[in-house]
Length: 356
Ligand SMILES: *[C@@H]1O[C@H](CO)[C@@H](O)[C@H](O)[C@H]1NC(C)=O
Ligand SMILES: *[C@@H]1O[C@H](CO)[C@@H](O)[C@H](O)[C@H]1NC(C)=O
Ligand SMILES: *[C@@H]1O[C@H](CO)[C@@H](O)[C@H](O)[C@H]1NC(C)=O
Ligand SMILES: *[C@@H]1O[C@H](CO)[C@@H](O)[C@H](O)[C@H]1NC(C)=O
Ligand SMILES: *[C@@H]1O[C@H](CO)[C@@H](O)[C@H](O)[C@H]1NC(C)=O
Ligand SMILES: *[C@@H]1O[C@H](CO)[C@@H](O)[C@H](O)[C@H]1NC(C)=O
Ligand SMILES: *[C@@H]1O[C@H](CO)[C@@H](O)[C@H](O)[C@H]1NC(C)=O
Ligand SMILES: *[C@@H]1O[C@H](CO)[C@@H](O)[C@H](O)[C@H]1NC(C)=O
Ligand SMILES: *[C@@H]1O[C@H](CO)[C@@H](O)[C@H](O)[C@H]1NC(C)=O
Image (cartoon, rainbow, N blue to C red):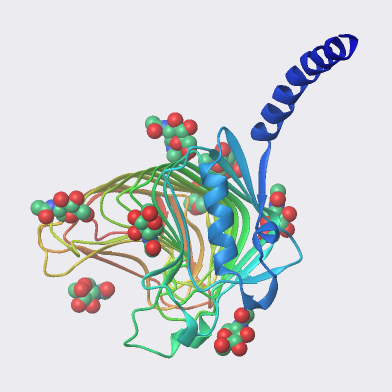
């Protein structure tokens, strides 16, 4: 009889403790790719380990953390971090992911995909790195070259403190996302690498790219059709083709872009500063209400300010407090306008060709 009482007492003391312990674990779910068989030597294929670790992190409840540990290099052929997930995920991305040579890629148009997620945070903590091994692709002009890091249907996304280099095509693409902040992203590919945009944004709203450094072979940032409320702040571009809206009219003439703010950016050795591109045949693409303010610096070539609009015209273009001079003393400084309407104030060179 005494023995039985003792048993019941112990159980009733232990059982609430067990409940608490389980709850504690589920609130701190951490999934490290090493626990799923990743090797991290830069040579073994760790694709399966990444995929298994992701599924566990995604299917967990509450908050979960996916860990790619630092000081290791993981070779993956293709990886899809897609939801929908039960958990809200923190992605602690402190190691390096490397791509194999072109022949071993399993990816079609995207190598690392992040999709169908709400509220994911990806933090490289200044250590995380992605190397797309693009040099094995750049020579192949008729290949469909993949994007390294693709975000699709992600809302409330934060990506920070990461390095991304050597993409076969665009380094980061953002499509159909609403609410994303990218900060302290360092992108690095050679000036000669073809189509290697830094960021390529399309059909997305409320996107911010800040405090980043982008060296690329094509556009630093391209903002394509269906994008609204995009802020680019304190980004340094170059080499590359500068920050571009468009090309618009690629798919149809109703592609729209508005509420884009490019502020406190630096362009060094880029072929353009900030530009808007439309497709020549689609004359109905209209350009309206564009302000260029506080562009100060030097340029090489012939045209410092080029407002070259199609027959449908550009309207309400405002130039204010700009000062652009030739890098070479005594060099020519030309401005060019065609079908461009708007006003100019306090700007060097004098944009005499802008009409009211
Ligand atoms: C990634 O997974 C999602 C959801 O399962 C799927 O819709 C998408 O096509 C996949 N993407 C790639 C590139 O495999
Ligand atoms: C790139 O691919 C080549 C060819 O397969 C391979 O030898 C090399 O190790 C890869 N580079 C990186 C950084 O992974
Ligand atoms: C920003 O990223 C760089 C390199 O990726 C790193 O050295 C630096 O510590 C990062 N800054 C922060 C605040 O993490
Ligand atoms: C914009 O995105 C941020 C998160 O990236 C979010 O906090 C904010 O509510 C969003 N605003 C709108 C209007 O969607
Ligand atoms: C962009 O900047 C505008 C004006 O400063 C601000 O109202 C808006 O919230 C910012 N949006 C994002 C996505 O950062
Ligand atoms: C034009 O393209 C946009 C995507 O940029 C799409 O949302 C829209 O439905 C297209 N319109 C037509 C008429 O095809
Ligand atoms: C840009 O820089 C100026 C001068 O340092 C500062 O006053 C302004 O707040 C900055 N704007 C943004 C959006 O960071
Ligand atoms: C203006 O645009 C037309 C059509 O794209 C092009 O042929 C011409 O060279 C451009 N002129 C300047 C000065 O950029
Ligand atoms: C840029 O140049 C304009 C015109 O000379 C001047 O008003 C403005 O103060 C300059 N801005 C900076 C940040 O140097």
